Image: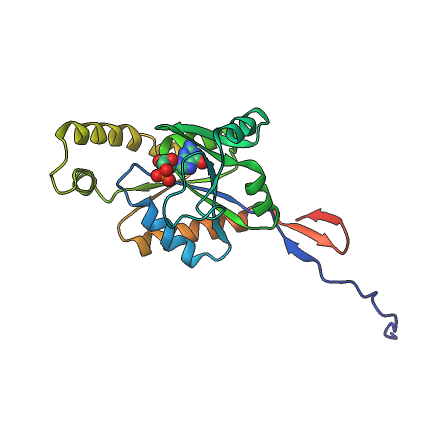
Length: 218
Ligand code: 5GP
């Protein structure tokens, strides 16, 4: 049999792309989510931390667009009216909110977005984006959490009592999350979360772009 001399038409290899994931990392205060998030962002180059809008004044060293988008109360109210937030809350005297457009800009470029947020914020995000991967960061033990929340024992006992009561209520939320990770050592916890994110990336559908604009799903 003669070999066909016909050449296969040259096609560009498809560029594999996918929309980014939303990753919610919540924990009771004192469980060390800020430290773990820092370690995680260092080891996951495709992961960016969500930047919220706030009406509170900029603190020394903070940068607009990096730490927060600093807006006026009038601007914030207008954004609420226009439905520009995924969720928002009033914390003490200031407003904080997650801007949809910024998140969309990141995920459409294939970047995964990390929300380091308290339990209440995590609940609001679950409603707004049920597709988010939700991770609950647990303190290694109740004893460790009490130690972290009570500090050096110099704090007002009533304030400590309220914090512990809140921690009990927040710990009860753990079963509602997709994954639970123990915050033993920040680097270890970050490695475990990294694994969860990579698995979630693989299990999500991958969009294929064939040349200009034709899109299929595998
Ligand atoms: P800070 O002013 O110290 O940066 O933050 C105060 C509080 O606002 C923290 O508890 C923080 O988690 C919360 N916060 C920051 N950004 C957002 C947001 O986009 N949404 C919600 N619900 N809370 C936020």
